[in-house]
Length: 381
Image (cartoon, rainbow, N blue to C red; front, side, top):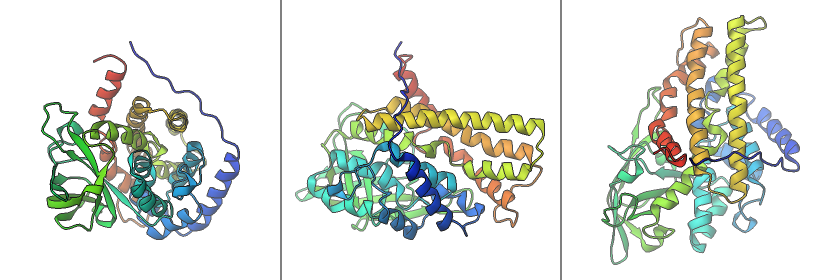
C-alpha cells in the first residue's frame, strides 16, 4: 500500500514579527467591519483593500523580485493568509491570482506573460478567475467539453464554464479546455490565458442561496484568442491543472471559512458555558489545530518544490467536514433563529454560514472526487 506523509514545516525567521504586523494592520483596517460582513471573507470583494495588501508586499510574497514579488517563504505567505481569513478580511478580489494563477504563470508562463501580469497581480491591481468547472461535469475535469480550435491567428473557443467566482470583476481567466480529440480523457487538454474583454465572451451572474452574485456562467461563442494566449505546453493541460489544484486545495481557507462564526459562538455562549458546549468547543478547536498542522505541512512541501497533490486533497476534504459542522453545532448550542440581515450579529453570521456551508464540499473539488484521488494515492483503487 502506498502512503504519504506530512513532515513538520520549519518555522521561518521573523515569522512572529510578521504575524504581529499583519494583526495590527487588520485591527485598524477592519475596526468598523462587523462580523456579519467578516463572515463573507471568501466572497468579500474589496479592490482597495487588495491594493493596500499589495503595497505592503503581501500579495505574490514568494515570487521573485523581478516579477514584483518579495522572495519570502511559503510559510510566511501562509501566516498572512491565515491572519486575513481568521480576521474575516475581504480577500476575494486578489486571492485567486495570488493563490494559484500567479504561481501557475510563474511555472508555466512565457517570459512575456510573466513580466506583463505578475507585477500587476503583486500590486493588487490585476484579478483572475478560474475556468475549470462546466455544466454536466462539475469536478470531473476529465469530462471537460469546452474546446479551443487552431486558427490562422491563434485559437477559437466555444463552450461554457460554470460557478466562475467573480468572473464579472476579473481581468483574466485561466481557461482549461480541450485542444484535440484524443480518446484519453486526461489527454488533449490545454490551458489558456484569457483576457475577459475579448469579443465572444458573455458573463452571466448566478445568485447563490444567500442571494449574493459572485458566481457566474461564462459562455464562449467563437471567442478569438491570440496564439500568445496558450499557457504552458499544448496538450499538457491535465498535468498543469493538477499542479494548480495543489495550490487551491492546501491553504487555511479550507478550514477557516466559518471561523468567524466559531468566534461569535464562543461570545454568544458567554462566560459560563454548559459542559456540552465546552465538549463541543474543545473538539472543534482540536480539529482545527490538527488541520492547521496538516495545512502548514503542505505549505512547507510547496516551499521545497514538491507537488503535494494528495496531501492537499486530504486537507481540503477534512477541512470541508469541519467547516460544515460548525454552523450545525452552533445551531444546536444557541437557541436562536439564523437570519440573514438580522440586527443580531450572531443570527446574521449563523444565517450566512448555514446557507453557504453546502458549497464547502463542492468548491475546489467535490468530496467524492477528492476521496477517489486519496484512495488512488493510497493504492486502494
